[in-house]
Length: 226
Image (tube, rainbow, N blue to C red; front, side, top):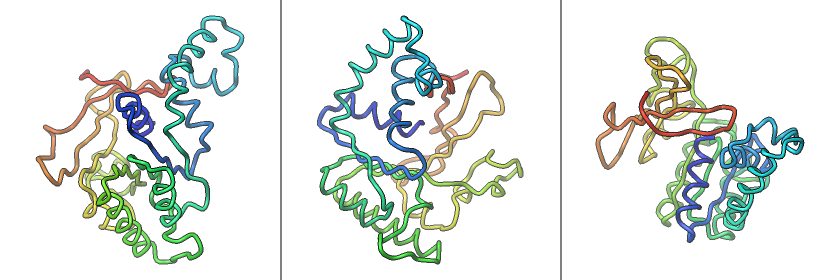
């Protein structure tokens, strides 16, 4: 949700940008419903089940949000299967995308007609191809699954470090900036921390962390310390 929010906000603030979203887990319709919920302030469940139609106030909010949201759809495209890096690169060229979202990397093959059984080798090859996109001037956002047993405290996804990324050290080595999203154990009311784990061209660590609030009903992250 956070990645999609950032992507659509980038499109909204920069009318010259185009995005290619490669999501292996959710169809475009669900991703767009979530974004519509965020923009309209109408609960995502009401939009997904179409129950918003029974409330005039919800209908008006959805209509206003759609009028704002619809023009962006001309500049965002969703990758269709096969979910493989060679197909992704082709999509970037066809759509002339400036932003690419890969969600999530462990589910991607390298070539659509070839399955590499060695996961570490596959992710290393995939990262090499993504780095090539970066060299072309494309902003690449990669979502990775995490290993539950890598936290320093043994509490699952808490205390995320670079070692939490699954399957290949190339993930932590190849990226320019790495963040881990985790609940803030010191706060309540939906507070989460976007923890800056790495910044190749600057300082990372606690001072670079971002505190956010998450509203699951509206699929929305907002800024501000608790």
